[in-house]
Length: 423
Image (cartoon, rainbow, N blue to C red; front, side, top):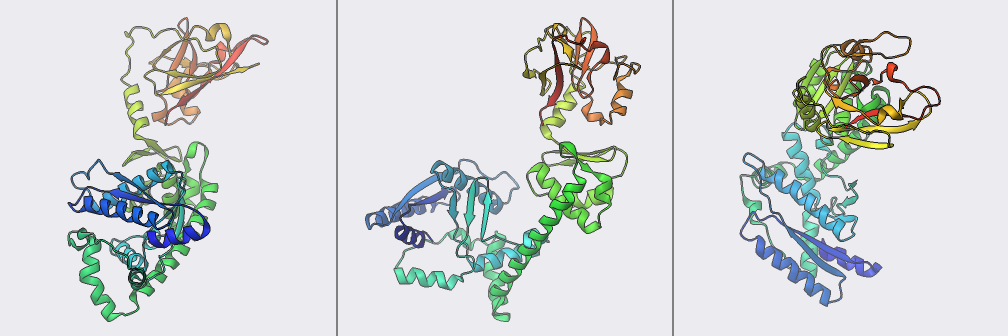
């Protein structure tokens, strides 16, 4: 791949950087690094526009991790970092048709869905990098013929013979029998992967349409709108929504649980690898581990006997971070419906307490915070935000806003306040 890319680059006047990742997993890895560096130097002396860059992985797979999966994920992270450092946004990968067929089979054997059976895309843009596989439709024999034609030396990764790894077992024990029984298996399986890619793209388009209907403010999922879909579309939308909410693919077991358990009404929780899913009053929401921990600690933060907090001055527009609360107060200047500057200049923050009462409007009676939160349809896990007081009187509640009894007079300099929790 590198020789072909450098040869083509010379013809059109661009440079190539060979990116090498030293995994540190086998003793021969130092020799591979030296081979790659020497090869690029020799080709550069012959006029090919190629340079060499390398990085070594410092971490190691954790106990119980799949070494294959760990190495793949760490390698792509390292390649992306090096590419961006070099000012590169196109990375070429040397996967060929046999690799694609093997990936399709492995995904099928693991029970993978359409996205898994789609195997490897020929080109995809992720996080500022285009990953391209120009040889994905080429058989291994064509690549070997290229090596012989150009008399290119290469090294073999000895770990490719290690039967502990699933791909190696497939390659050495299953593939010869499969090709013996079905000579066109490689091409057929690769064609099936292409069809799975088309199906995955269609499902993604359907998910976008369903998200437009079922997703509501703050990224929540409207449970009733979601349940109105067919079971197949419910699962498809869940996978898309969770990927959007968490940044990663959801486990099939989690999807199955949610399809069975999410209620139209009522409150339930499901743990995820990086937080928690919560249903409340017809909505499904994902909370990160950080937000869950912050909410749990908020209930234990203070007692009525705790020393009063330092005085806050919230007259200045902008975000004012509140230490220990995992969020900030957003302050804006307004001409009505705000808190008088003279009041905003001297505020104290504390947690919610029994007996606190809030007045939602000038023509409404003060009511307990529990009733006000219920009226505002706020789930229980969002009710532990800060309260602001002026001379002992409640003037602001996170999630509810400014108490009507504390509103500034017409024409008085004033500010609006809003609670912005970190998520």
